[in-house]
Image (cartoon, rainbow, N blue to C red; front, side):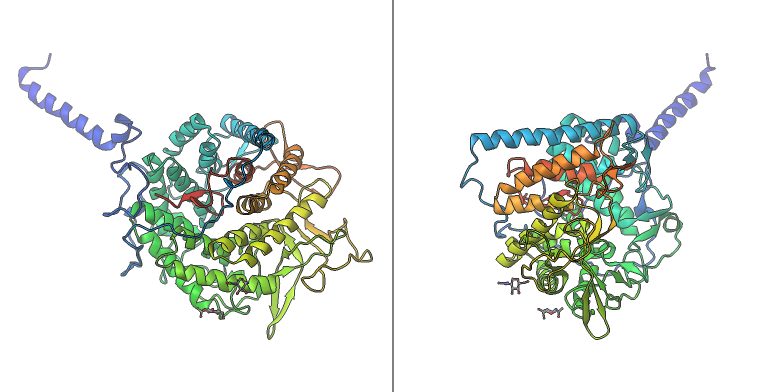
Amino acid sequence: MYPRRWRWPALLCFIFSILFLFRQFPFQILPSPHRFPYAQKNCPASPPYPSFKPPPGRRFNWRDIDTQYPVQDFQRLPKTPSKNDLPRVQYNFEEDPPSLYEELMRKRRQAAVRAAFSRSWTSYKQRAWTKDELQPLSGGSKTTFGGWGATLVDSLDALWIMDMKDDFEEAVAAVAHINFKPDGEVNMFETTIRYLGGLLAAYDLTDCKDSRLLEKAMELGDMIYASFDTPNRMPVTRWDSIKAANGIKQSPAANGIIAELASYTLEFTRLSQLTGDMRYFDAVSRITDILEQQQNATKLPGLWPVGVDVQTPDLTQDSLFSLGAMADSAYEYLGKTFQLLHGTGKAGQYKKMYQSSMDAVIEHLLFRPMVPDQADILMPTNVRVNGLSHIQQDHTAQHLACFTGGMLALGGRLFQNTTHVEIGQKITDACVWTYRHAPHGIMPETFTMHACPTLDVCPYDTGKPSVHPGFASVSDARYILRPEAIESVFYMYRITGDSAYQDIAWEMFQAIDSRTRTQYANAAIQDVMSDKTERIDSMESFWLAETLKYFYLVFSDPALVSLDDWVLNTEAHPFRLKG
Ligand SMILES: *[C@@H]1O[C@H](CO)[C@@H](O)[C@H](O)[C@H]1NC(C)=O
Ligand SMILES: *[C@@H]1O[C@H](CO)[C@@H](O)[C@H](O)[C@H]1NC(C)=O
């Protein structure tokens, strides 16, 4: 027993220790999944005011880092709720309902896609849980994008959409423990489209009820926003997070990439819509203003070159223009951000930029492939501008550029231009053509085709050298489980209602699944042009996040993730358009 005179001090000591523990570990002691004070009844129709702040936790807090170059005036989203009176995007499927046989067929195909997803997901859970990627041949795991669990976060909304709700719940519980702490160089583009996009979409799909997801999106948003702390408020896209955490100044790249500069728009706009925090919307609006100012001053007016000087910023010097690698989503996000803004406020700027850029795309970036069956197809390619507007196409086709079909079809609906829908269809059909006519039914990563002299059909010239009929040369014969072709097939199906696209999708799915399937999941292929389809021990997170999601959605009821209610980011993460 203590002597009597020690009792009170001992008791006080005990009370203080308890209080101290609570201060240190409030979340361990109270592990309520809905601790977030701002849990929503449903998704806000206008940005909440005052804006949300993530509750203080024990994780690294990027808001605590001092701002070097503070912003004086913030561009803001309109305070009034946005009305969604944009033109209809999807085909009116109610008008001609499918037959019983078609419904049965659709559901069987959809079940096959879901089974493939479930197989890869189960292996990820068993062998690579919370790691960036599963290695589908060895059954190991690897770190590729920051080590925060790229596949885990990227797959959240697909789990929800495929009605794997137990797995979704388990995944969200794991996501809640991610700590976005400083850890070397970060690729901000991939972090934004995969992680931030994944978190926002998952939150939107829960009807804004699972606040753990918004909380995590805000933590990550704070980190990404810190990479905008530069003299001209342009982002550092390959950002040293350790330097940033230590208050060491960084500048935007003098030799940057247009896609990395111009692909924050959709995610940051959504984050501001959901939190009321206008820092994000302001940050992307500054980029948008510069894109608009310089759009007509480049070597190919209407388009921005692949290489850009973000430091000045000067987007007019480089001479290579493309819809493929390093450019793609800069264009994709113009029409989509217009849609996310419901055509109000700054949306007019995005509309104008979409129209000018697509005029230039249609005039300069397409060619008519010379193919044995004279199919009615158009392929996007790269252009070099030499000297005084000498414009030269290289007739390269890239799997990455196959998203263009879907982009034009969506834009054609949003801006009521049937020419865009028709061209989008011909581009989609070109990608499908290369799938169908490649040896294993899978399009390679990068190759060239012979071009007709004009955009009109021309006879096939058998005298021209080719590695395979229709394929002139193949510089990168891999297939790395990419989504862009099925993405455009999905858009064409939802927009035209033509069920031929479901049959095409089924053909593509069977070719891909059978050639890429491994003991554990699905793996990239080294050479889709050769007899033996040797595989690579890699399964990027977009296999689950995009490729299989688009396959699933092609075979789902068109009301699931309707293109009139949702806009998908460049990693196939759907953001809500209606409250
Ligand atoms: C760029 O040119 C197009 C077509 O000539 C025009 O419609 C658009 O307004 C111009 N953009 C700017 C920012 O001047
Ligand atoms: C449709 O798009 C084409 C190509 O971009 C353009 O030349 C034409 O003016 C547009 N038509 C309308 C009605 O906007």
